[in-house]
Image: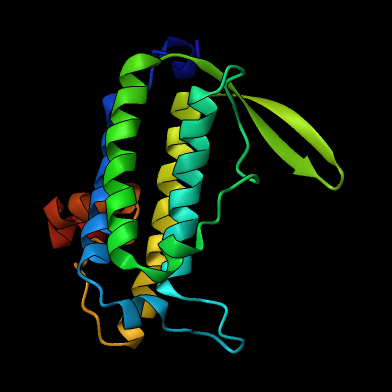
Length: 189
């Protein structure tokens, strides 16, 4: 029988912890930024800022939380708030990240095994996909880490140093840890 069939449906602690770790790293990074660095434009057309990537991450967590609070338990990542203040002011973004951590903890305690729907827009149609809180937490970890990696590249361009693990997916961190414990002679075998 498949190991998936034996897995417990409520999200495992690991998924929750991965999200909290990413949100905490992001909150500390943002909380230490000067507004001019947070708003600095990057790229050929100047469409990228640290603030826009942070706001984008926040929007996705807000969409999940809104879906969990709604009567229908439907998440729609396309209907994001896109609050420009969160793009402009790092302290406001750091505060919102702290609020998201608290709201996420409360939502998980309130509905650990709820089945959800996710609206996925294709052209002018909207599909309703079946999902779960565990699946969405896994998605948000990967999505957040992906944007944190971009944030790391942008921050590096203006001389902002980040911890080595910033923007690195937990699976990669586990791989690095395994590699560090394997003797060099066993790696080449």
